[in-house]
Image (cartoon, rainbow, N blue to C red; front, side, top):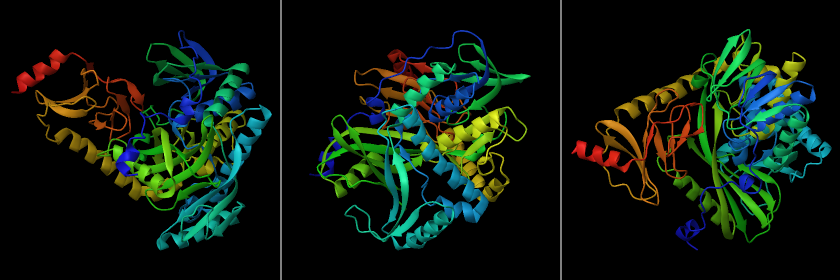
Length: 521
């Protein structure tokens, strides 16, 4: 079967995790409230933090702009692992052995905590132990894998060097971590959300936070004009939407990656896998009502900077074809992750001088354990004043200075994209086919135009409402994406992902479009 024939398997984007669980219906905030801790963001970090704090008797409220667990959490590969690529040798060499030990202990503890919670609450979330592998087919990574095995072993992780993996794939080398795990993230977290409510907490959906002011306590303003007053605030909105302090926009960059849910003829041999090569490919299995799925993930690019986003799905299809007899591809999805300058998340006080404002971000595609680590650290900081893992994750850690080259590189990239977007010539190309989107010239202005299958044109202002960068069309997801800070918008201008807090200007009047053409010619 040809690759073109395989492409016919592809369905519209849909995550298996989303398709196999119900949508939530928590209330919208309709009045001003007062709480001990307000949590902005209802993903795995926000739900886990609220669960742990509510158990301690803390009055918490989660503010979610959409529905909980529908962002990155609902579009993950859901590996619960302390194996984050080749991270330990890197932390050891660029930070310290002490910080590497904290990172290892935190993530190993997160695996055990998830297992403990799902056992205690009797959550049926497909939790199972699996070994985790990093393998390579290139000579240049062999020594790096050996170094990682050595570093991880010295940190107490049960790691080993192997020259074969259960797949019939010739490899040069691999490392194997024991006692890792996988699960269904939404099945687990939807139950944790119910526990938050049982323990006196509140969850508000369709409640977008747009600003935070400090007036003794913190006061969060929502898009609908409601106020949430809280002694302490946790920003767990994936990318921090609050720009007044911390310079997070200058030390985080956003990458998109892709996944397929594939049905194959062969029996999956067990285990979780990722390649050392870039772009990485990852594999794991998942039971479903319709039989076994193989989740194949990988590929990546900076948000808004992929010229043809569909090619990343095509690359995963080709990889699937190389290793399996593919029978169907019922699911495909993509997500985006916040990447830090030194590959270690920012979890802790938002800045060194904001003792009651906290942040959890920058998980670098390893969010299942790091989200749980954020709950462990932040609940300890709030309830007990300290955490055994706080130093390595400290958003103000001095070791970030060692990543000055990365800081310069990423901010040059942002400046380049900003300037390019403003100065790029605009095409006078008004031939827009159904299902197609493009940026066009309308009276010298950038206009984002998308024609749906009914022939209706959807026009938006392509200037991002976050910091003014020019958006690019994402053909695979039919969205307008920001190449600077990762905000994403629907073709009708609504926010899909922040840090933007305001939608795009939108017009669906075909006469407007025809007037633009007339004026331009």
